[in-house]
Length: 282
Length: 286
Image (cartoon, rainbow over all chains, first blue to last red; front, side, top):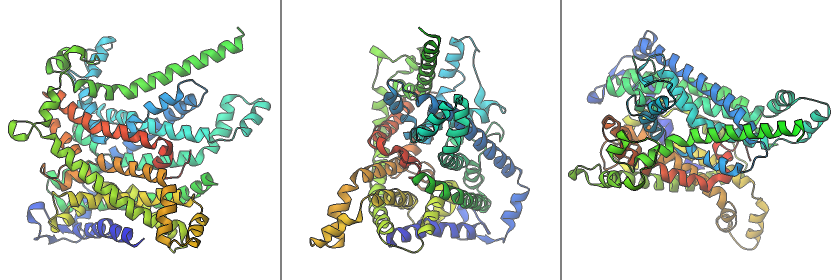
């Protein structure tokens, strides 16, 4: 036990404390060692920091939209894959590949794919006679949806694979009983499958929401927060404020506020999750 | 053919269609990156984007990215070496430290077990960027910026809770009686752990190590903050840095992406059996 606790305290615990301290100072990379104590000024500045509120809005919207799409489509795909279809193992294996991808690799791939002039997306649109080209990444209204779409593309296999495992673990008896009683398939889905899978859904939900809330690489590689500030996620804003605008004190304050929010959210969800996990295990 | 049977066949055909379409959509971008890495610029910008290059296939992109920087290459080999060093050391540290801790949690009644669970979840959920600046500050004051050691330390700390959680589950499935009988036969506790429990937990160890591999190999945020030169930068940072040249050298970047992606995709096969358990932190078992 001891080595792991020492490691966690030194490399996770200490920086968190340091972060709270640094968020009370006015400092920049160039002036490390001459930090100026400013009390809560960094936090007070956050309140009318429009960039921050824009980022919060985008980040919440992104996480909500992406996770909703993934859960709905993932459910549909898991139900399809749960049928007695030949070659299912092969499909299952194929779907593992996106799970192993680095977020940076995903971002770079899609950046090329969506290139307005030579990208495969433009090529496909022309091929099917839908449009001559697309400039989705530079349109304020479209860019957030492009990122959400890529998130869905990347995470849908993950969601599907887990929901499928959940479906496979369900006992057959309630479904047989329902069939004998004359229930239609949509009825057994809504009244038997969904309630039984509640814990699995909760686990998927928690993991996906948390991972979507911290999105950085996709934004960094694909849009740099633009066009305008339409896709500036919280993680990206922290990076930009600290390392581009060189306002380290401010950036640290945003980071700490973000951290507190995530820890509170985790605490609430752990309570829910703990109960559900013990249900799955038993 | 009866109407009911026909309906069933139709449903099955539809299911096939949707599943195949889904797999095509998921695989298409990955396939595209791999074939593009073997194409010349003429093929990339003039040819069919989804056709393999066939006889015009070239290794020029790979030759270029593996060339040293002095001769106008990007020396991807040194970035790969950094990724490999950092990943290997991270796996070694997290597996030893994490498995021992998990063993303690699984075998001994200890105070703060639920606290440990909570801690684990929090560390898993903390956004890297939220603590990125203080971590950077700490590493800088220790004068460890741009070293393998800093990345190994940070990755180990953030991945150890995951290893503890996974291994605790696997170790609890191994009956303690086996160790007890080994100890009656004259082993001490460590010997019993090493000769009895570890071999039985081997598949779980493999799966957990693979997840740790993915976590370290694919990591970008800490690597981008804590390293700045090819001496310590990892492959993910190299790729992100190359995108400013994306108007011209797609093939080269595709080649770097391919060498980053392939090991990860190959590795994930090793843990297929434990995939669900690993992905859900042990919450859902297959």
